[in-house]
Length: 264
Length: 295
Image (cartoon, chains in turn cyan, purple):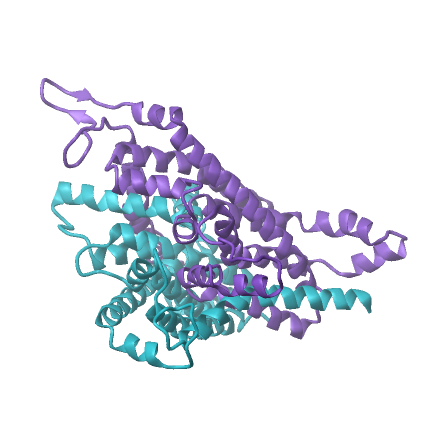
């Protein structure tokens, strides 16, 4: 009896610690006062101002566009890696392949951002492209560090499911391509969706790599938010936080749904 | 039987992308880190010179410069200490949570796990920002402390290293809990009952049974927290003060403020060698090893 009390307390305190800051943020987003910390009364004023803030709206659209595109590319390439690592025996320089596909996971973002920026500058010196940095260079950088996340999810899923199903289908006369499209792909589809949702969120949330690789006309949402709250507080960002956190948590729930779908 | 062309396409499309956009950029960092710096644009000399015949123009000056100046070494050490302390607190909070979630009944377990990880999905930047609000001079924590009579005037909670640790532990906690839970979840809880039946008390059970079984989870979780924290830039920038400089900030300023590209590249490349390489090598050896044992 006593140990179950300790258990409930620990879990309650842990969840409180995780959710308290989020609730504080949402609470203050309804504060009428321009001075964030002084409560003046409940109001939707800052939500209204948020939707009329062109800078934030524009940044939001840019971020969504980059996130959707880079998640799509990263998912396609990540699925290829995950499939190759589990199902294809002969990969030239396999250790190098594993190195390339797993290092972006552990490399600090700052180093990745710097290397991408210096790469784009050097590339421009050599072939005259990209002449200026912007949405395209952010997109390329995001794809590069998102691939690894998809690869891991797909690899886990493919290791999990029985290879015999594929072999049985082949014995029944399916050719390689048909097995891939009719058997393998449908089985790993939930994981592919999960991978897309994860990389979409990672790209949407990235500040450091985007700061290095951004250019004129490519202020993503985190860049704008960071410039607003680096030195102080912003009531508009409070309102944005509440909306964004809600949306991202919904995406997170979908991720769990798809990732767990075929586990049991 | 197998479609070879198809396999080639699958292996080489991502291979090509990653060599071009990941490996070459890393190689460029290395190249610039051994270049001679100069005033100009770009602020370094080419490593191959062709005037007066072919000459290789490299230097280790930039590394010597970094490793002999306390400003750089000191901030790297600060970052390592910060990462160590933060990892410790993540473990301290994360372990009991992961353990109790793993020992809950299966339906509750899944709900709790989702509840723990969901905050991780909401924006990183905004979760750090939330702490900025909490730790303000007239923020919620100070109000509580004042009302409880613990302090008589608001404490300066923001813009110091403790606020940074707080922010890091908060944002990285799920990364500790997930692998811990993953391993704890695997083992049969009858172990605990069995050790109790054999007469071990609670503390002995923990140290002799539970802890040894969760070592792989502790290692995995600690690495997931430790490495990114060493390179962390946003949290010290938002919550930290000028009391301590960290590796991320130094790297950022060396590049954007001092415009010393070779110096910044040398800092970045040293970071790769010290932090990332050991883990990547371990991972490759491990995956090759498990592959061999499977056959």
